[in-house]
Amino acid sequence: MAETNYDLLLNKLNEFIRKYHLNQMIRGLILFFALSIFVFILVITMEYIGRFDSFVRTVLFYGFGAFLIGIFAWLILNPFLKLLAVGKQISHKQASSIIGEHFGEVEDKLFNVLQLRSLSNGDSSNLIEASINQKIDQLKPIPFSLAINFSENKRYLKFLIIPLLIILSLAAFEPKIITDSSARIISYSEDFLPQAPYEISIQNEELLAYNNDDFVLKVKLDGEELPNNLYILFEEQRYLIEKKSKNEFSFTFKNLQKNLVFRFFDGQFESKTYELR
Image 1 (tube, helix red, strand yellow):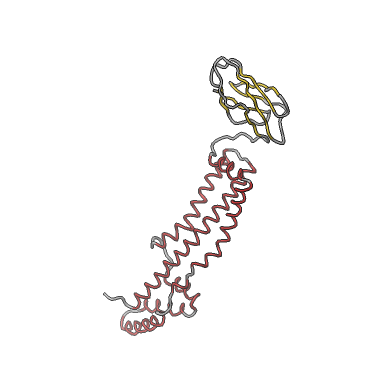
Image 2: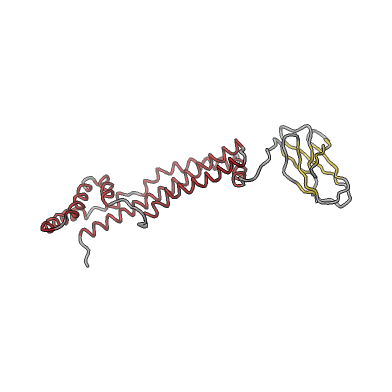
């Protein structure tokens, strides 16, 4: 069966509707990444400054995940499904209105064709059909799809470029804000020790000792704020480490019988765990 003029018009409208939803999806992709990066920066900065406990980090982790899922569904998945004709697309009348904003008099003619088609019945059908065909002939040369311009989405790129520049600046000048905060939020269920204002470096080439022998542990501290005293914690006991200089300490493990797990403590901050084998 040959397609009527009205069928051809509907095909043009349907093509416009698909392009409209594709344009929505392209715009949604840009805004999705812009919002995702911006909120990511906000979350890691809050964590870096606040160093929150496990509960708050859990809220941040799942809140950020829920936010990503929500804006993905809204900005990308929704128009993608409409592009596949799954879900409610814009109507032919809505499409006519959008096309009319671009082509002036087209909106009224399209509305008239759609209205006349709905009235086409009984004795007046031939007369109405003739009127419909006349208006459709006037609309045929007009490329409805040109009412959608993909390049207009470039104006949304500024919303993506700004957070990208911020994240690149952080990566270049303060990478710890990204790496440390991300690691703490991803491991939201773990408890993290407060970070000391100095770094501990063990001067021994390796933490390896022989059974029944002594082992002298040599430690050096680097930083602007150094503690007066440094302790070593192992086997649920705390021992004061001998201070050799302002930033050098040593401690002797006597008659080692087994592997030892230990950490350092200055009265306020604890270090990570080390193992002497």
